[in-house]
Length: 360
Length: 174
Image 1: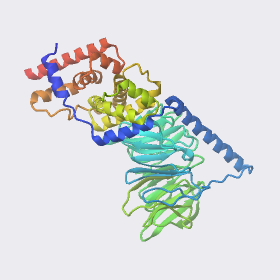
Image 2 (image 1 turned 90 degrees about the vertical axis):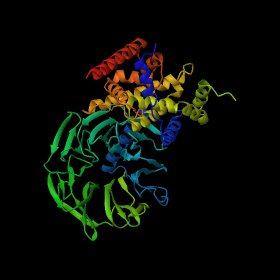
Image 3 (image 1 turned 180 degrees about the horizontal axis):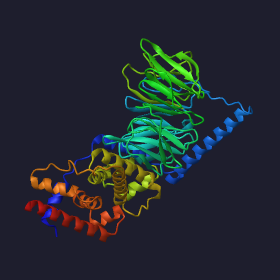
Image 4 (image 1 turned 30 degrees about the vertical axis):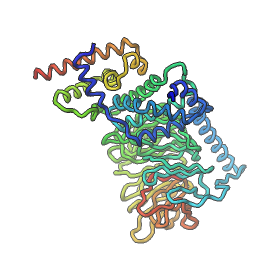
């Protein structure tokens, strides 16, 4: 028998709002893409991701070892002539495995084999060797395969604002907007074992150490913090603050950080000035420094902090990633190893927002 | 012309028929979304949870026992995703769980009090209340969706109603 209270509850709660038509269309698109009658099971797919990533890393390690021993010549580079850049679409720079960015709020990816994608996203990261893409889509962290298929999707509880894939591909660190705060979490590369790392961080992309056992991020107080996964220990790195970027060297344990007015390498200030970007290139740190009316100067440093040359880059340097210096110029986004030979990877209108650009 | 049954649509969708899958989606999207909204209380989360629920359901369609009804199975996936999400949020946030905002245009102070009292229920009790009175599911359907015994659903409903009555009485006295 229905009581007065139950009738009131029905009357109140059944007037729930309707879903937005747009949400339904996007959800239908997602659902239909998940429809794979002949595909292996979800668990099988996840295992396949893990195995494939691990195999690729082992292969790369083996190839690197042979190359170091002089037994194998390793050559990276697109065999096919890259397609011309289309407006708003990324093109692969010569020698890269993949390039990804958020262009005007939409994920844009290009990898070898022609994978291109254009969906609304808040953050993106390429896996090692650009085999997969992790992206913040809606309030989920999503891993996408080269054919654009979703390998897995994990509800993040908020907008994902920064993602970093470990060098071995087995773990992903990501930052989620949670109300007025940002929270750091880590999840396995197959979408399982999600864990909270820090309740209060800044929305800066974390950086993994080469040995995969630790990563750096920017804590809520603005300091660089190194999180040791094995010991679940957080250590503040240096006294520099507020840190705007963190970047571990591709080998060893040297950490570089940037603040609005300096670049610090291994605890030592190596550059004073307005830092546009900072990253590693051929084992050396590249720091792009704003120069006013003249083009930005990219200064190169060895891991021990010794200067190792410099060059000017066109436009404004937006990233140093995958060995490339990437600049935003009036002609579009260009990527190159040096000023000469820079290639347009994205034609964009002036004022276009380009974030999270990453070359892998 | 007679509408195809869920079973027909599921069978065709399993063979890769996208039209059948889309028909299944359109048949259940609104209910799935409203269930997700009823549990999470937020539009953006409901969009994500319902979409994620369908994605998982379609990806697992090959393993679905087609002799069983599709709706409760889908609701179970959606409800579990919503609960996982809220529990994860509760773990990492000191903030209160979301109240039930914008559920209905609230006309008088009595409705406001009742809505506030519903929002004050524990997550477990609130979910069964909104699925029962907001989505219109029977206790048996809720039990199936949440993977709980029917007795547990009934006792949670009874305790929730008791708590709501007490809260309203206290307010009335004050």
